[in-house]
Image (cartoon, rainbow, N blue to C red; front, side, top):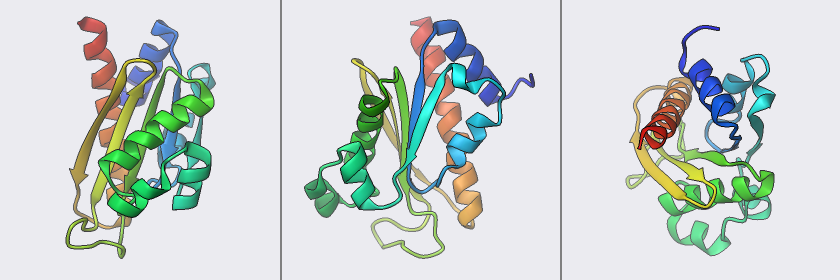
Length: 163
């Protein structure tokens, strides 16, 4: 297996006997596809929900409707609830959630195309969120979101292990 971020994640999850689930919006399944390209990823990857619409975020992941109305789907609070919701739904140890504006349309002055919120949730230990401000076309924004998300997840897991 190549020494890529995904193969390193595979090793960490298997070694620590922990699981992962995903809640994807703007990446539309690209994170899941990246993970499932590795044979035997089912040893740690439980599944994902592509919550592309607000209603799916509300109905499946338990995101509060009033929060989406107040802050928008592309926000720290919403991605945090998405991460917690998928973790609850799948009983995974960790979850990763993304929501953003991949473009080419849909951006606003406050949240231009390339704005992406990401969350890593660890069951019973809290959630870490961050925001990206990416440039490029739709596919480049999706690709960079996948890359950044998985790299930060690996860093998060290996830093927690060392401390």
